[in-house]
Image 1: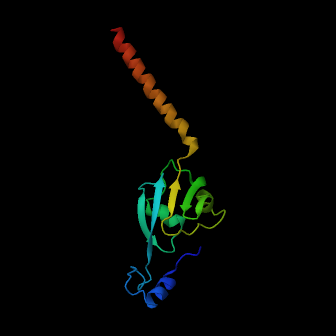
Image 2: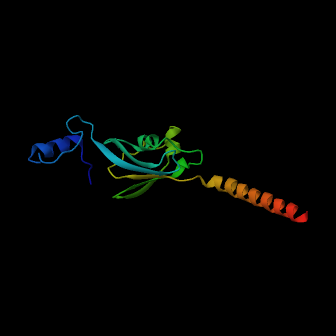
Image 3: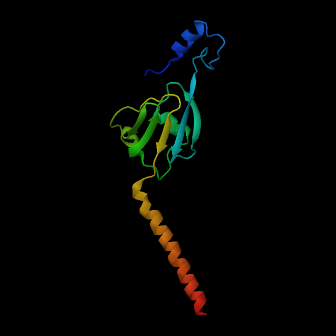
Length: 139
């Protein structure tokens, strides 16, 4: 399935579809909705240029958090799901950043190497709480 380009939209409008309004066709600034979720600073739905790629989508969402796993970013479209190594791209390795289509969902997962830090923090808080209760019960 091919993506509809601004030129194709303009041609459709000139063929009797004048009752429909497609914002941006006349100026060449057609935009699309892209959903960006997961470990980004400001997850949500963004209006991006029709030719936007993955880097633009993550950037629009404020960029990745410190916990983001950029090695396994998931891109979900109506055609299926792919995993992309954004970290490799940012290091200058691998494939170019993929172009997105309208309605694409980008998911930036949390790094699996950080789970132990959270587990250790929770364990520490439990130990401190138990110690406090024990000290107060002794008095």
